[in-house]
Length: 199
Image 1 (tube, one colour):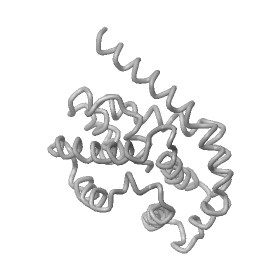
Image 2 (tube, one colour; image 1 turned 30 degrees about the vertical axis):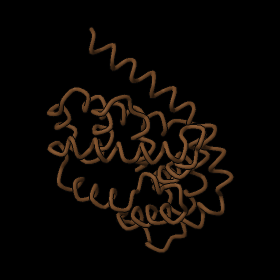
Image 3 (tube, rainbow, N blue to C red; image 1 turned 90 degrees about the horizontal axis):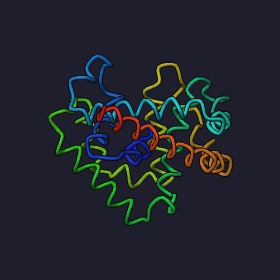
């Protein structure tokens, strides 16, 4: 789950919460939240759908698919947060620090809406400042290890992190070809959400 990218592609506080909640709730529960949080859930899904269909992501998956087959997309997602965190055209180092602190603050301000499993993860996320520290190789290694540990049908010693290190140039190009398109798509989706509110 590329938490940093999802949190960055938001347009209000409620959407930040919704972007995080989408992976932790049942579909039928999405309508129990305030509208801005629902919009964040919708935006998360639109981002995932766009990402899965983008040619650059198909290329990025080739780095991992020989090792993990259908799980390649999960490791591409983790990799994307590394390149987002290191993209100083998107944000300065200080800006990324401020963004990370804002996300943690917003999530705490909406704590009542967070399921228990997410609350537990938020504690760890904040303690180790995952969002800001995705810029470091070792934090990507940790995230990839988490994916391997959660995957039922993958050996825990598959060298996915080594594949990431060896193919950084390829993955960087895929990110460069992809992320501007994703930002444009997210802005368009948000504009549609705002129009629906007015209609």
